[in-house]
Image 1 (cartoon, one colour):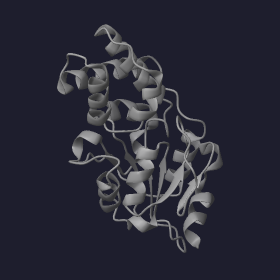
Image 2 (cartoon, rainbow, N blue to C red):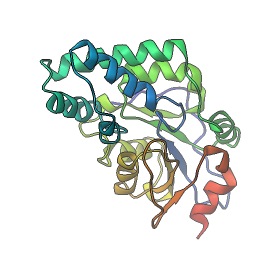
Image 3 (cartoon, one colour):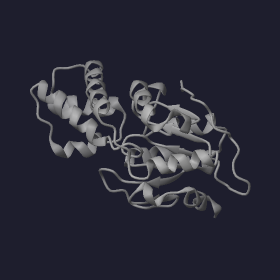
Amino acid sequence: MTSTVPALSTRTAEGSALQAVLLDMDGTLVDTEGFWWDAEVEVFASLGHRLDDSWRHVVVGGPMTRSAGFLIEATGADITLAELTVLLNDGFEDRISRALPLMPGAARLLAELAAHEIPTALVSASHRRIIDRVLTSLGPRNFGLTVAGDEVERTKPHPDPYLLAAGGLGADPARCVVIEDTATGVAAAEAAGCHVVAVPSVAPITPAARRTVVPSLEEVDLPFLRGLLTA
């Protein structure tokens, strides 16, 4: 299931091969990857366990079930996956209610895409309750479609969320550009057949065919995105 918000026009600019831009949320548009880790550390501390900082690279960018399941197994904590999921979402939601910093260049890029009527989707492994809270800061008007991790049978690193988003916007995945910050998200986008712009947030990502790595969204604008598909 997906949730739509006021849709942008699905027209693409004449002569442009770019049909849609699909964006990850945590660590890509909002500076919240650290919030998830802080929430995990806090919850497990309350359960009497200390998380090893090296585990941060394992859990970043993945679906809640994978991250939470890994931490339960690694610590031996006496808690169910369902119980832990609620606690982590509560902890994260508490943090974004106090502060929700956008990544540099995010607001400018979203405004540019909207101004040029580029079909745009928000595609996240976060649950719907979290996405809807973050949308109040990102602006729901900036997205023709949003896809949450708890609304697809298989979330990232599987291609399903990006295939669903492209289909919902009436776009060919091969003519979409995905913007991601983690290896898990990049894997999902590439499996869907999309071009990828990676803006690494926690762990390094290397360039590859149909994958461009940039240090910040400040480097990304509409001419840049269109240029990825002109070849």
